[in-house]
Length: 314
Image (cartoon, rainbow, N blue to C red; front, side):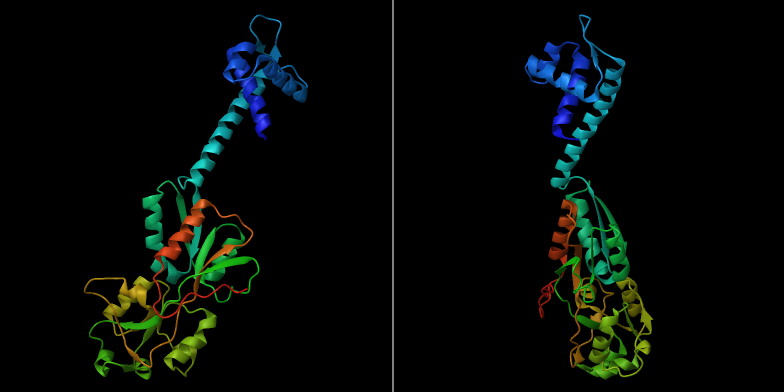
C-alpha cells in the first residue's frame, strides 16, 4: 500500500473519531477543503459512501465502520513496520540465520555469538553446524543468510560471493608427556605413523594435501583412527590417550589451563592450511544483522602469521 493510500485511510479514521470535518482536518494538519477532497476521493475509489452527512455530527455508514476498523489495524501495522525497519537499521531488531562448518564453528561461533548477544541482545540468532554441502543447500533454500566453511570447492560458483578468511596453519598436537615428544626437539614426520591419529573430517579436495604433508603412502582410509568434527572432543580424547590430533593451531592454543595440548615440532614442518571463507548469495540483499556477523567473523578470526587470505576467484 502506498503512502498516499495510507494517508487517505488516516483521514477516514480521523473523521470517524472527531465527527466533524473541521476538527478532523485540524488533527491531521490539513485545510478543510483538502481534507474533504481526500474523503471524497476514497469514497469514489470504493464507490460507496463512508459517512452520513445529513446530521449535525457526521457519523460513519455501515461501509464506513468496516473501513475505519480495517484502516485502524492497517495503520497500526504500517507504524509497526516502519519502527521495525528503523530498529533493524540500528541493529536493534531482526534475526539472522548463519551456518558453519564444524571446524570454523569450533573457533568462531562462541566469540561471534557472544558479541552479538552483548552488543545487540534483541537480535535473534539461529545457527546450523554441518558439512558445507548441507550448508549450501540451506543457503539456496533461503534458510541461511550466510555460512562459513571450507570454500575450495565453491570458488567457481557464479551465484556466490566468497569473502576469504585468513589461512590458518594446521598442526599436530598431543598431550604433554606423550612418548613422541622424547624423539627430540624436531620430530621426523614419519614418526607420526607409529601412533593413532585423529582429525576433523577432511574435505575431499584436501586428502592428497594431507597425505603428502604427512608422508603417508598407505591407503588414505587408514590414516586416521578417529574422526570427529567437534574440536573439543578431539582435544579431550588426545589429553587422555596417545592419539595425535590434527587441527588449526590457533584453535587448540586458545584453550588455557594445565590440561592443554602441545604442538609437535616436525621435521619437515607441515605446510597445510585452512581455506575458510564467508559464503553469501550474490543477488540477495543482506540484512544489517547478517552484515554485523560478517564483520564479527573478520574481526574474530585468528590471524595467520605465515600466509595471507586468498583473493576471491574472478
